[in-house]
Length: 269
Image (cartoon, rainbow, N blue to C red; front, side):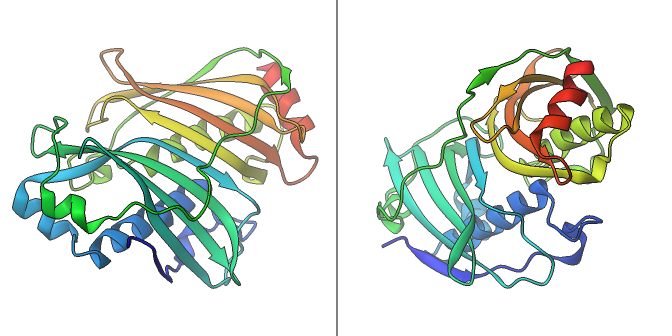
C-alpha cells in the first residue's frame, strides 16, 4: 500500500495580495506531501542520505481546479501509481479542501545516486515500500484549441545561493516562480495588474539543475488559448552556458477579464 492522506498547511507567505496561493507555493505544498508520503512508508530524507540516493523530479504536471484561499484547511492525498525498472517512479498528489480536490498533480521522478545525481536502480527495500496503486488518472495540461504566436521576451537574473536545496540546486517549485515572474513583468509593462494572474495548469520538464550564482534566462512566448479561453504560454529556462534547464508550459488568465486581456498583453509584447 502507498496511499496516504494527511494535513499540509499553506503558510501565510504563500499568499499574494488577493489572498490566494501562488502557483509555486502550491507546488511546495505538493512537494511537502511527497516527502511526508515517502516518510510514512519508512523513507524520510535521512534514510535516502544513508543509502546515498535520492529522487529528482523529471516532469511534473499540475491542474488548479480553483484557487486556494488563505485560511482554508488543506489536506494532501498521495500514492505511487507507477514504478518502472526500479528507477522511474510516478507519484500522484491531490490537494483537498473539504474532501474535494482543488489541485491535482502527477510527478515523475528518477532515482539517482548522490552526489553525482546519475540515474541508478533503487534498492529492494525502497521498491517494496511503495506498492503501486490506482486511485485516479494522471494529470494532463489543457489542449491548445486556438494556436497563436506572440513575440518572445526574456527575463535574466542571477540565481541566489540561498535558493539552493538539499541537492545544491534550485528546487523545482522555483521554476514556476520564475515563469510567473516573467509573465507578471510582461503584464505590468502592458499596463495590467501583475498580481491578478490566475493559474490553471503547468507542466515542467526538468533537464539540468540551476546552481548559484549562475546567470539564468527565462524566455516566454504566447502559444494559444485553451477551450476556456485561457492563455497557453511556453517558457524555456536556460543556464549561463546556454544549456536548457527546463521546458515549461503554463495556462494562465487574469482575475479581472479572464484570458482575453492576458492574450492581448502577450501578443503585444
